[in-house]
Length: 175
Image 1 (tube, helix red, strand yellow):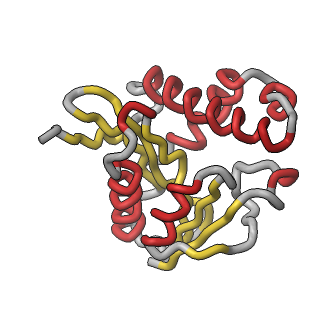
Image 2 (cartoon, rainbow, N blue to C red):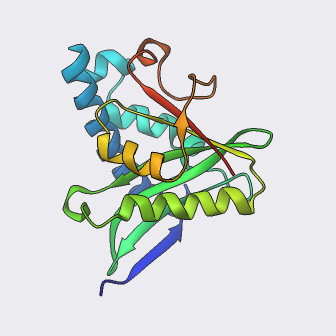
């Protein structure tokens, strides 16, 4: 049985791993969006993916408990995925960047990460948890729905550009 370990990530001490995983995640997301829109990633962002990730890493991954928590998930000492929550306003948190590397998929690790951050959201006193999800993230949608998330309108704090809101999925869950 593999050994799973959650590491509470710090954007300073875990910066290299956070940057690498977030670049992998954003490269995948933007490649999928390009298939839908025909627009290249650099055109969408106005910069390269690594530049974009570096510009948002502290906002996405840097909120310390109880404002948020961001984790690296290790399996047998190897970083397999990531995910976290961050405060968006009083009583409301947002799930951020649940991502499992392709070679580790199919073992419910995304759900494992989600359950961890939802538990944190409850422990930190958040009454509602938001998330956004691309139209191509079908497996994630099933997991979110199974955990009580329902569709909602786009929310102001979402990282997703307004131009994508019509094709994107926004969800909420009460704790």
